[in-house]
Length: 292
Image 1 (cartoon, one colour):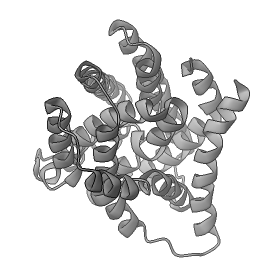
Image 2 (spheres, rainbow, N blue to C red):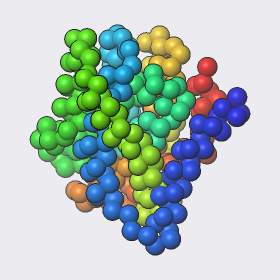
Image 3 (cartoon, helix red, strand yellow):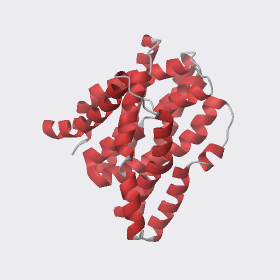
Image 4 (cartoon, rainbow, N blue to C red):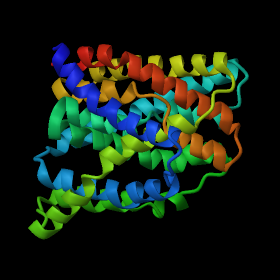
């Protein structure tokens, strides 16, 4: 078991360290370009090729999508209450509590821990996370509810088309599958390298507050994932993926929203860094808990 856990963690850690070391040695990393490439090209191709390749029952997809929706609603309600009691800025800190880093960090772990089935289930959670992130999350930070960003997002339309094809039983032509599979292969390594770059660039300002918010994100995620998995009767890979995705640290795009709308970006960046470091330290225990 220990060797299995090490085999899962080491690629994640090494890829993140490549990005971290790259920046610390003074090399240039074009984060805006890489982010746009991954989100607009790599991730849509990964979603399409994964769902075209694996036989996934409609019930499993709907169940994981429903579980993702429920858990994020719980994160939002509890996060709102706690932040209100603590008298902290909702627009700055609430997105970080609602949206875990199920992309950069979650997807690689889903793939390495549970294989192609895990990746498909992880992508389902990731998709719901993206849809709500670019609607609810952005509206919390901006103060204005708008779906324009979502409609401009290629991942949204990729999901609509891909899910429609899967439910209709339509298979992709070989040339299209091979192309998207090849391009989609860059997504997970680049996500991890970009995560390492982000950790190298972020600065910690308020240590006590950031630690408290980080503990809340990880603890709330783990407990909620367990409760919803139990209530929905999820087992095997579905249970493991839900708990693991819920237990991820603060999403990097929570910082991007804070920076875009000037919602204390330095404070939010600190929660991203600390929650990610804490998550790395807790990964062996988390994997030991969720693995069959």
